[in-house]
Length: 126
Image 1 (cartoon, helix red, strand yellow):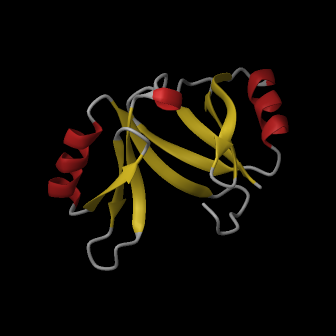
Image 2 (image 1 turned 90 degrees about the vertical axis):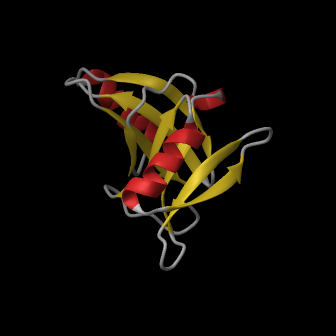
């Protein structure tokens, strides 16, 4: 996630599941994505790449480590200007922080649940 992200944009999408290898193989056959292993230090998660140009469009991750508490489901990462302020607003407006702030690439991320129950990640670059 090194390229400058636009505030308010969806900067990434991934799926966290107990069997990332099996689900990655499923989407390879169903969606036509090419599966590329990504070393997580003892196990692989998977980049899902476009077959024509190899551009990574999503990730499929094992429900381990920092992802252990994430519910199965596609998770969007929304770029925000100020993660701390966004998390305060989330709580004030009836949402819940599911995964507290942690480093991710060149920024920081946290996972929230909105008042309707939908889950999203908030990402602040830099």
